[in-house]
Image (cartoon, rainbow, N blue to C red):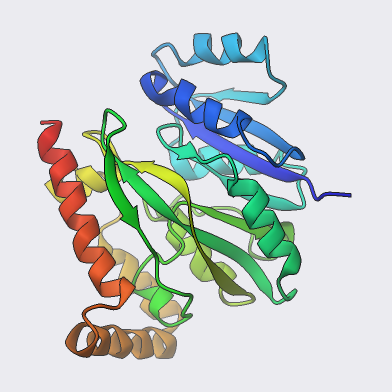
Length: 272
């Protein structure tokens, strides 16, 4: 029997992108999934659009007052029944083979691999292509200095059972902190296919960070907390990161970050 995949989609006032995100889920070629949408206190047309889609598709809707992303994710995953888990934002788009490719990769992986992740395309506010952005292969040390997993991923339920839910103290860094927790017990594997479209726009987290307007956990505070938990691993990663910047500027961790920031700046300026 194919493993059940649980997809959680938190959403807050993104009705203008929501249809495209839902269509991406329902276009998946892998059939054994459940979708749990968490409406985190939206005041736009989100409820109407979800009701419209419920007439044609079977999925769960959780409606709650705005509690921000980590708690919205926790509300969704508390209802998840799947053997494999993932989540997607309501302004991004899962490409049709995403689940099929990642399920196959996780099925074939050694049990010590708890999570697989893949590359992505970037797009602007209007869906225009900003290029493909490939991620580095997994490195447990560098993970403490860059979110290697990012937005296209699938992980085993055992990961959640071992490390718990998302930490509300890491707003806009909740996913990265979660991968770091998982990495204490499991390895991860990079799948070199682009299976996701990530939107950079005026209200996206990355564009807000570029403009300095994001209400997120500051990187310095994030790094301080991680360094306090894993000091030796953090410093090894710091040395590796500096070595890559100095001697391997073509490494995906270095070159991709530069290209990513350039694309985010273009998207932020274009929407201003």
